[in-house]
Image 1 (spheres, rainbow, N blue to C red):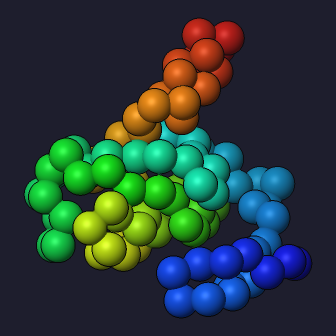
Image 2 (cartoon, rainbow, N blue to C red; image 1 turned 120 degrees about the vertical axis):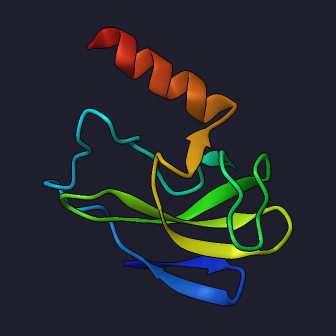
Length: 98
């Protein structure tokens, strides 16, 4: 565990569990990945960009995102967010490999 600087100062960082793998219809994001809201969320309208600050879950991969407007929202998945930029390119390469 090391300290990672977050919005509210230093916060603990744990390596994701080896069994935490996404299902076929889930997105596999990492800490720091860039995303965009695909639907209107409480405090973050559709199209708002953000950064993943927490990724957790075994059967249901979910993410906590700090959006560009300063709003932090948890329990988000592929129904509410989509990868963008380098993250989208990385996920496309992984999907292409099978």
